[in-house]
Length: 159
Image 1 (tube, helix red, strand yellow):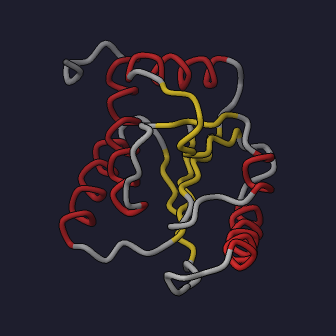
Image 2 (image 1 turned 45 degrees about the vertical axis):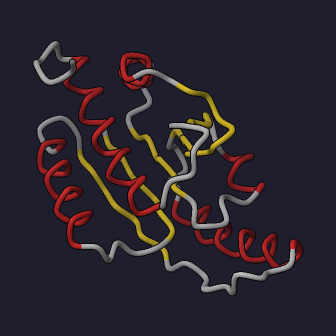
């Protein structure tokens, strides 16, 4: 399976980079992994609702331009579906069996995802009702994808 992770914003913190590198290395046994990092639009704290929509739309256009035509798209969205690790593993397994050889996960910027990106999503996944920094979310996502492959291969790791 080929997995792309499209994210808005660059990873700056060394501890996150190290964690991402570690899980990328572990995942290479199971999947081809591609990272697409897009620049986030810098915006002041006091943006109007209209300006927030414009920023999300601009970021959304960049995101949509990076999605491969045949890819199954999973957005990380706070109001999406909550899955256990086992359920995520089952979802990934079902996609592979049904011929979906390319999956794209999308992590939005600090303002979230545009409506256009949400409409393109084949599935909306929520890790929690809590808000996480999008840089940290990339590490959490990679760990859960790795866990899913371990579960699907009946290999020790998941407890």
